[in-house]
Image (cartoon, rainbow, N blue to C red; front, side, top):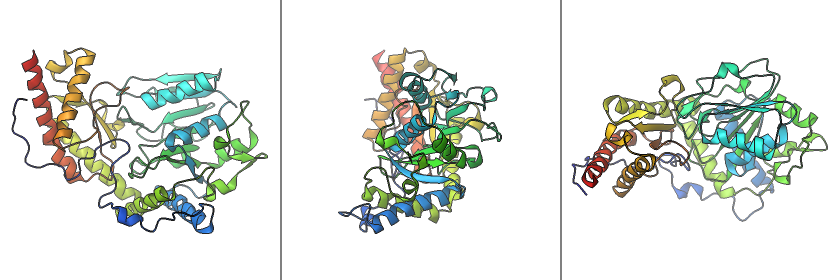
Length: 391
């Protein structure tokens, strides 16, 4: 290894993974000692804690009072699949896909649900599809924040207020860091392990009155597994939205989620969370402005994520490499950073173009983000020196 001068300061917390994300500052297992363990989640206290998790989630996010919120199995994926399988098929559907998760929902709709009247509006990584071409007489499926591309929708203004179809939004890397336009969203899903650093395997499902009406008036033509069912005899299973979960939840994870929500309230709720994520993303933006070898994957600032920030390498010595060699270069950088305990898990998603993906959500301290930037430069120069030596 060619020796280069290393930065003097390391991030106190080198966890910049985009999922599961860093725990909240000061997190300790000591805060989970009161978890409701070894008891039925259907006991009065168990249901009360689950209901508390639902209510506090809705309160922090500013969910309208007439919306329904539930804890569901299998993380954001489970919540989205539940929505797609339960609600689609009544009318045509437009699917927006500009990164891997949107493309995944499109694949499920075409290959599993096999809907005839479905179309995909696509864009390359780093861009958005033409939002003006979305047909709101149809159902619309989209991600608010493209976790694997670093691209988000700028706001909800493009969504028709008088839409006929439902909007089904995967918001897992946007919730608790970006301001969701609730009146424009009929179904919203996210997971505990993203923006507040909760534990995995639990998802959240938020339904508007319009979505509830669809559930109670429409029966899909395909069988629904028990784990997806939200209605019984044509009526909403209301208990699911009061903490009577479909399957057995982890009460340890629930206690951890309540702890994360308490921390969120302590930093100013949704406004404070957004401010923290914006500050972290601002550190990266300032660094990109200074460096000559990195650029944002999302070129337009108004669609650039403040959570899953994706950067590409634009140095000619690296861009001239083949695809496999570029990927190997990025992995070399990541290995150097992990070896120095400066950053963990910051390579781009496996489906995305080779590059770095840095989580900038609210649970990351801005001081740690500031400490990371010189280490990125060090890792790049070290990997580049090794590349030149190999040549």
